[in-house]
Length: 159
Ligand code: FES
Ligand code: FES
Image: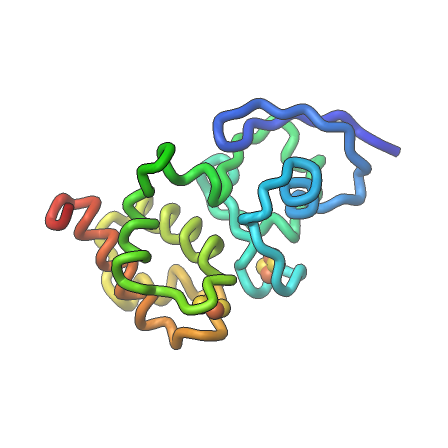
């Protein structure tokens, strides 16, 4: 049976008829075409599918799309302002935080949420807060460096 749901995604109101069994991640990727939300484990472990739901990080693979009815969602595609990268994107790029970058969308969304809550995290707090996101390539130090670069950019210490 299909259900009509409406949510705002990256600033655009979207109404869809979807089956109740479908995950939010699948709907975002397949119905809306925003494939920047990656799917790794599909059971809540890797964090690749992290989006912001009402400003909070959420795993889109663990949610049914019908649960997002009425919600405000931001995906990785909604971070930049046109051609202007979000400070966290700019910082991760400058710090060369990623290798294959499969994990990058999830880390970026988690980092945006982290810095909203705590604009000046210590390295330990960064590691703790991002511990729900897995990266198979980097060993994480370059990602922590990227978050610290983002802190400096947002604070105005770097342009
Ligand atoms: S794909 Fe959602 S947590 Fe891994
Ligand atoms: S850079 Fe490859 S999984 Fe993180």
